[in-house]
Image 1 (cartoon, rainbow, N blue to C red):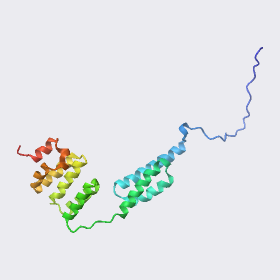
Image 2 (cartoon, rainbow, N blue to C red):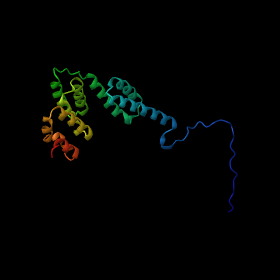
Image 3 (tube, one colour):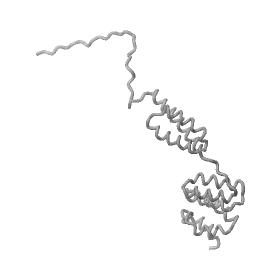
Length: 192
């Protein structure tokens, strides 16, 4: 049986554009990518504010983001919001002496709150620049956070202010991370 060829159907040109939405790859359009990028920029700004300790500015930015952000961001944003609230509700500690503030800083260090401990120790030095124990504490914080150069600098200053710190550092397990550094050994045993 011979095959019948049919002519292609003619289409009417009406000048109207199709009402179908544009097809997109991976389910996203350029418009939604722009919104997502904007949200990511705002998110990064809010996180940066938190890292700088500006919790009062970060809080409203995060609250706004919570309303706009895609679901995969909401848990993290809620966590950051809780941190902002916790810092806002944190009472400012009052100390009767730098030594009392040092004890508080060491308790923060023991709780793993290295940045808070560092801030307290720096405050002590700002008010009492010959506080060898605060320099020693900063050396310990630096050792525990893997900042060997800062550890050496702060420990050098602590020993300069009080040579007994050299003896203490020799047996301090908090400075154990520095044990393999030849500069640390030279600092603790200069006559060897």
